[in-house]
Length: 185
Image (cartoon, rainbow, N blue to C red; front, side):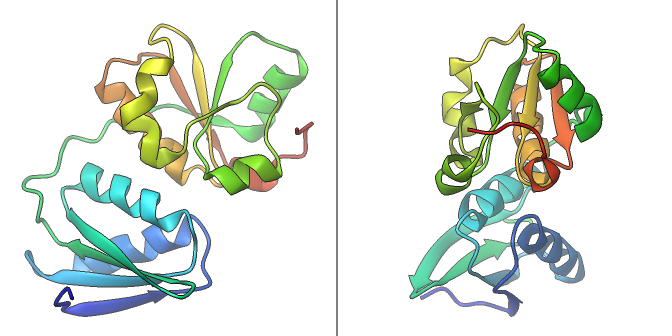
């Protein structure tokens, strides 16, 4: 059992709110302290792992109790935070026009499997955020890649990871599938 210093209740919240609330709470904590995040969002595990890595915090692990995921993060536990690269954003309206015009592009959907299976943009490549680092070599570094998730938070984290590995033409689709009204499969 992990010894925690603070508990954050994020049950019932969907992406990006568990990360938003975690980030806010971490700012109030002293270095080395452990935060326990209670969440019910299935995607929160991959989201918090990726966020912790990109922000310099240590992802300790997750325990499951029924429908509740208990995530543990140590502030500044992974050493100095890495440099964050912010990729350009494209509005959902501008992205929709490109899709409707059948422009040749790579669309990367980084949502969880069940979100992707519910509805996704035709032709989108599915790599959940938690797998992006291990699977990004499946994509061509020279292609224009439009990264989408539910709201723009996970896609931004994925874009940061990919930019650090040499992908040069990335766009974060904001707000994402939460407001998508176009054709889906």
